[in-house]
Structure formats: structure tokens, C-alpha cells
Amino acid sequence: MSRIKSFVPRIEDTDVESVIDAVKNGWEDRRSEQIDNLEKQLEKVTQRKHAIAVGHGTDAIHLALASLNLKPGDEVIVPDLTWVACAAPVIHLGLKPVFVNSDESMCMDPHSMEKAITGKTGAIIVVDLAGSMPDWERILEISNRFKIPVIEDAAESFGGAYKGSPAGCFGDLSILSFSGTKVITGGHGGAVLTNSDDMYLQMRSIYHHGINQELTGKYYWSNELGYNFQISNIQAALISSQLNRLDQLVDYKKWLFNTYQHHLNLVVGIELAKAPDWVKSSHWLIVARFDPKLGISKEQFIRLASEQEIDIRPFFYLLSDMPPFSTYNVEQSVGRKITVQMSQNMVCLPYGYDMTEEKVIRTVKVVQEILESHGA
Ligand SMILES: Cc1ncc(COP(=O)(O)O)c(C=O)c1O
Image (cartoon, rainbow, N blue to C red):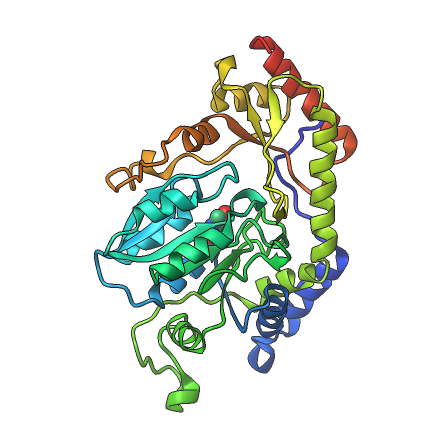
């Protein structure tokens, strides 16, 4: 029996042709052709004025934070339940993460966020986790009231929407990722988006060593200290080509979610994590929450599934539990129960573009056996 992999991307012949064209011809005066195309496509899909394609989503967070000109020691509010890339650039920039709790949306709890705001808060990174989205209206009402800039991390929600507005259009800045398992992938890749001309110009300058040839008229002249966050034309070709099929890819993800839902319906002790009604989820991940009373850990769950040739992945660990982040503050006012349980009792079922109904049925059967062997 062949192994059911956690994730397999969908790469079509047209994507390969586009990459081959970039590899063969995308040099010198065509060296940024696909990057320019990609940025225009992203501006359209996210309804943003400016997009800058970068090497990784992590670079995009770093760049977005750097454009806010915060002071060393300023605080940045980050969800505790998310991917490490949301907090690492905060520390690299000499800023302090403050971790806050999540609500049933799997995303930042607006109440916990408000309680974490202090006179030193310089920014808030709000993450649309696993294709879900938070209560954006409340989040923006609070952040506007306190005049604190917001970065929307839409790495996992790209292709989805909140009350009709596309993921990637919220906050002062937003970021995307095109890493290997995302709805669309370039192997690696990311983007930062904004409507602000000032932030855009500043990010354009620092994303490539502060070189601004239009301004200075000189090649290889750094006008200010910057980074090298550029994406290659070849990666951009792969991402740009898939972007033409974004709706189709998200439709497939929705089909996969519904198919799991249908087959898990009668299984006791587990349910799929759903986005709130206000969200059109990208269904990037298929996240299932198992009953904590069964006394099984997510690591055991994954090991037992692996023995049956099914790759299941853990849902996120809490950042504040991990060594690089454990000394920073965690907001406590709403209690930790939802956040901790989501981290401990959720797993990611196989979510690749190779999944068929037959593979879903096989996965669900193994899941059911694991749960039954623990008393479900
Ligand atoms: C929520 C979130 N933020 C940021 C990133 C960082 O993206 P990358 O891996 O492209 O650096 C990812 C993906 O990996 C992510 O899932």
C-alpha cells in the first residue's frame, strides 16, 4: 500500500513551461519580467496598491516590521498559536514579542489583543491561521482606536476572504508565503503588500541593500543599510503561473474539506476545525480536533498513523513554550484553555492536491482505529 503523504503540490505542464522560459530566457533585460508580472497579479487579487515579491514569507514579515521604524525594545503583539516566522523577525529587529491567546476562530482573540496593548506597543501581527480569519472588524476597531499599525499575515489564508474582502487586504501591511506546502508554491517565496506609498518606497529600497538606481543614477550604490530579500525570476514564474488557477486550487481545497467532513461525520471523538461563518476559508490545512478526554497526545496520534502509512502533522506548538521565546510575556486575561487545547489536541490530516476520495476514506479509517483503540 502506498504512503499517503502530508502534502503534494499541483504543478501543471503550463507551470513547467513558464519556469523553463524563465530559466532559458529570463536574464538581463528580462531578468525581472516574471517578478513584475507576479507583483501586478498579487496587487489585483488582494486589492492592494503595492506588492513586493520576496524570497520568503519570513522576509516579508521582517520587511513589513522594518518599514514601521520602531525603536529597540518596542513591543509587537503576536499570537502564541502560530508559525515561528511570525515572532522570529520581531526578535531579530531588537523588538519584543508579546504573545496573546486565540479564540474559536483559531486566530487572535481581539479581547486578549486589547489587553496586551501598552504604551510600548509598536505593532500587531494578526495571523489568518490555517485558512481561517479572525474577527477583523473588532481587531481593526481596537488597533485604530490605539493608533497601532497592523500587519496581516495571510500566508495561510491566501485565496480566501473575510465578509467578501480578500485575504491580504487587511491592516497597514500584509504578507503572503509561497513555501512548499502553501495553496500556491514557488518552492519558496513570499510577498509584502500595502496601500501606503511611503511604506512601499521604504521597503523597495531596503529589500535590496538600499540600492535605488532611479534615485541615485548609480549601479551598486547602497543609499542606506538594507537586506537581500529578493525572489528569483524562476520562482516568480512558477508562482505566477499557478496564480492563474487560484480559484480552481481553492475549489479543490474546499472539495477536500467537504469530503473529509462527510466521511468523518460518523467517527466519534474527532471533528474538523471550521472557520467562522464570516470567512470564506482557503482551507489551506485540514485541521482536526480530537477529544482531549481520550488521553492521546498529538505526537502519539502521528506515530500511530505513520505506522499505517499515513502522514499526519501536528498543529502548531505554542511559541511561548519554545526556547527562543519562553522568556517573553504571555497575555493571560482571557485564560489559556482554548489556545492550549488547540495546540495539544489538533492534527493536520493529509491535505495535498493528490488526495482522492479513496485516500480520504483510507485516512479516516486509520484515524477511527486510533481513536477506538483509545476508548472513543
Ligand atoms: C502563518 C505563517 N506566517 C509566515 C510564514 C513564513 O513563510 P515562509 O516559510 O515563506 O518564510 C508561514 C509559512 O511558512 C506561515 O504559515
